[in-house]
Length: 229
Image (cartoon, rainbow, N blue to C red):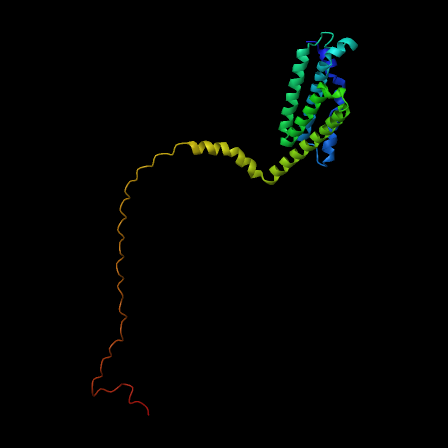
């Protein structure tokens, strides 16, 4: 594989201008760039390189006359290899966009369709500049949607931390529910309750009554004399 020929085919020095569109779209949302922003940048890079390879594949006959030094006319890169690279890079760009959410994937799909339509025919028609402007706008929108979707996911995870735990526990719960129920255990008769002993009644003592006084004997005086009047 001739790496220099592939670098010329894909126009690698121009890659440094690609992340600016996705970053500008992220800045337009007013949100902090995150994981979705970097996925959008990767998707933009892949789709841009797919357009470069597809452009040279579509212009291979024209380049054979006007620019025979290009990688495909010179034989350093075969046409089938260039077309395969365009397909693979497009698939890679869509795969990265899908990781950023459905809105980002829809935007990347529209961007990929615009790139392919431009390279395969629109660039030689009056609709060529419109398609190029649409591709640039979709690239900005890709950065914005990916950033907004990623920020919304982070906010939901912070506000509802139990949701992620429940979603992770769902497969385990499903497996548990599919298990066969255990057979019921045989019940043994309960032992009879021990008889309760009744405490003996407490005997109540009868309080002692007053002691009986002995009667005085008649004719006997008190030694202290008669009582005073």
